[in-house]
Image (cartoon, helix red, strand yellow):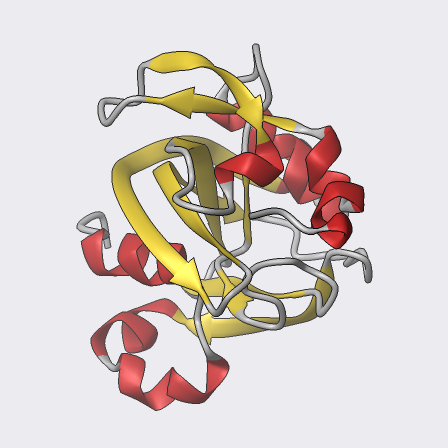
Length: 186
């Protein structure tokens, strides 16, 4: 059930790509509809950027986000738009959220894909086929957008993967936790 506040939310003016469980496109759906009620499975991505010491860059989602506000995420996460590849969508979000441009990283690539469904309080849910992308950040200069990111933190990736209990106070986003658990490249 959408409320007047939902109908005026910026997500009500955007579409996401509905997909089947194999990530085959099934058309466009309203982004707000995809994240409320029972939800609609849609395409998403999460990207993890690493520095030369194999630390992962975490970003705290802005308090103004509808879902998982103030939770800590991988470097960026979002949804590609129609006609956009996962790599293109990631490049766009890296620049919009953190001021990171393609000349600052090497070998941005998809390393995994998984489906998940998680509810967030009484605000909505994520039901996504989520691609995981990774790259090495060769220039760690950042310019976080305060409308998107409330904080940034470099964390030793292997330590976080092996001992998530040490970082429990961070309240990690579910898609990032799943991506990290599934990561066999490291």
